[in-house]
Image (cartoon, rainbow, N blue to C red; front, side):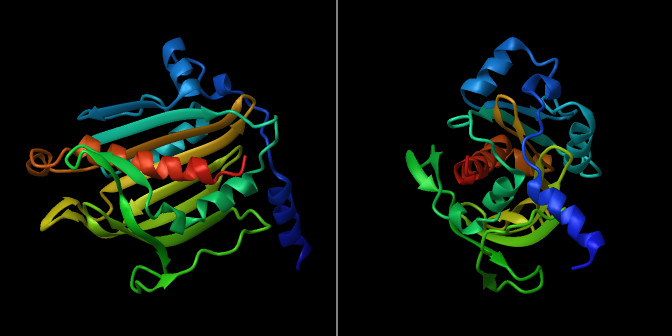
Length: 256
């Protein structure tokens, strides 16, 4: 391996706790919301005239805003924020988080409370990586990596209980202090014959950073839906249930 390649990889493999605190990222968060983020999951949703209200400060917040809002002009937005305590003050490396983000098959069968069925049901009946947007052949999740890449891209098919086979592009970026995991649909997400979210009209970003108090997980999911669709489908609920299931999957898979 060339020396110029080896040194960045060595740096990324060793990279772990940033030493930043929660308040460094959210210096102006109200005490009540801060307490909720530490005791559970703080969630906020917005419609129309959308801007991020919970995003972390600094460059990472601006980056997430650009990815979620961008040129899509979402009609609906759901944000969430939580901090997971460390177990036994055990440090967490970004590599462990990266490997957790790769376990796509573990999304299968994760439950959410269905108000129409009045019981918990699996949101994703199947979950797998696929070869490419043009080839839907399922491929296995890779073994855990020993090296943290600067970026990674994969394609995913989720058999959604409402939307049927749903296709996403997933991108992972190594940021200065944490990892950013993004999902965007590269085909329409449809309820029966009704396209609820057209191609590239759903974008969810999950940012994970080990901070002094624990593992910080922030997410922002935006979607653009027409007024016609919004009158037929509960768009905030559709976004929130998928974000909640993916967030739970990510949290459970982080080896902390």
